[in-house]
Image (cartoon, rainbow, N blue to C red; front, top):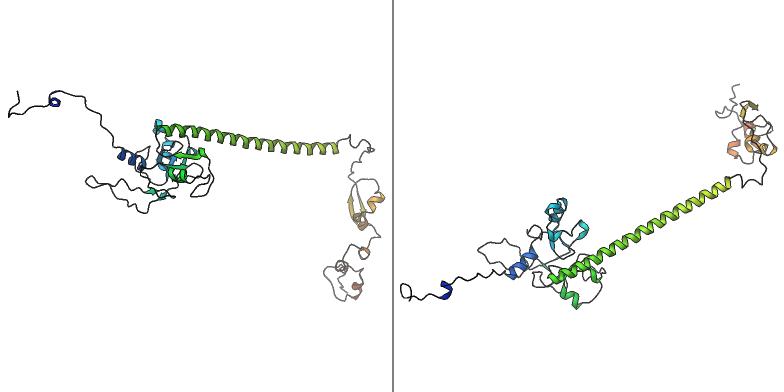
Amino acid sequence: MGCDGGTIPRRDELVRKKKKPEQKDKDSELSFRWRHCSLTQQPLQPPIVACGLGRLYNKDAVIEALLDKTNLPETAQHIKNLKDIRELKLTPNPAFKPSAEKGDAYIDRQTAPYICPVIGLEMNGKFRFAFLWSCGCVVSERALKEVKTQVCHKCQQPFTVEDVIILNGTAEDAELMQKRLEIRQARLKAEKKSRNEEKRKMKTNSTLTSGDLNKTDEQEGSPSSTSSLPVQDKPLPSKSTSKINGTKLNGATKRPTTTELEDPLFKKVKNSYSVAKDPSASEVYKSLFTSHQKAHQQTKAHWITYNPFYN
């Protein structure tokens, strides 16, 4: 009944069974997700960014994917521009020593390059971490639960519940992050709409004020406002010129009125005008003319006056 040599075969050796699917190593999978980019599967290098669903990326890889939109996978279709990601403010782990991974060497998966700045937990995948969308600081979920506050523990910037995003969460966490993402987008749209309405109101108010000023100017210059005053036709200026005291005056042919004669410009061209009697002229200016009392004491020629004393 047996095979050669007296061996007895077992059932699993004679009957073919379905092979069980290979089970993933959860520890290695978690460490891979926390240390590699979700787009390119390359090791994470600063600057490190995260999306609204809590996935980690290299910033350079996201920029290249946005420039060439065909490279975006289905899991990253929600990233339309750089506003949909946030650069993370990570706290380095002083006990972490980077080393090249070798096939025949032991790889320590427990140590991580970053830790929680509040309680010092390592960000290796065993502990849940989250970041704040308002400032980008990364802290552990345990620190957020133990120290309940609406201010960031690291930079003291205020945040809301919708700003808390869990990194590399479960499927339930992904659904919650999707809802928070929609709430943030709706809030941003409402804020943008209110800002545009305020700008539109300011523009309309400025145009109304300028229109009122123009209306008042038109009303002041309109003939209805001056209807009570007698309308007189202004005489057209003639081409003839008149000479007064050796100076030419271009103007109308009619004689100047008494109010025009009182003007200092008309007084200066009259024969009775004298610089020495002008109260608005200074003494220094008056001393330049021969009508001043100092001119009688002049013995030498002066280059300003018209009395050169040639004789």
